[in-house]
Length: 336
Image (cartoon, rainbow, N blue to C red):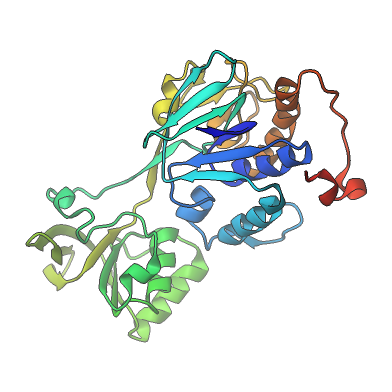
């Protein structure tokens, strides 16, 4: 059993910042996330997308922000359970919560923070009849390790930031990269679109617009895709990997069964401290809802800060909470 003071469900930016605020109060944190690495949407969907509304940063790449948050919380030594979904919670006899993951990992804590962003993510799959036959046999919906595609033939489908970013990145990794998009215009950042166009013009990638992958062929493993093109008809292309990047669909998942008050797939909270209707459970970031809610990272940071103050009182009911400024004490003064 993994024991901690605050168990944080969701290792996105708000979950990570919670570790910092809790660390200032000498509270230990452990984070659980269904994704294989910290960062949530920032890492999984648009790591190279610039963010403009983080105080003190005129512009910061999403992936860079995650790196900075990880560096910021490193002194407080948080624990991580990654690649496992939070499945169930129950109250134990000692008053703490017992949380069990999708892989059976058991966690215990007196306080739970739900910082799951928009919930669990499931890939949006293209309507190809036999696509499940090739999952993990040449079809991947998420790129976990770019080196996996070293010197391979890769076909990427999509027109958003993720498809553009990975096309650019894999151009220097894979032996052959093709990007297939059903339109001639893209939804991603202009800079990324320009880079993809430059790569196509220089012959480093193949760009196929006005086309869709409609078929997959192979014997136990993918070896070619069938592309339906608007003017050229049916195109068959040899490939080792097909990566449809149409985004991830958010779902509240098992959290919906935890007895929380939920409105339109979001958890209702008290704005005094962002507590839920279940004592000891708080919800911060995009996953919560209240009058005037703005789904901004900086708002989630504020919510985490306020929630941690109330969490301290639950964890240490007999101790007086003394607020200190980091400008006076420094971060080292809070470690212990």
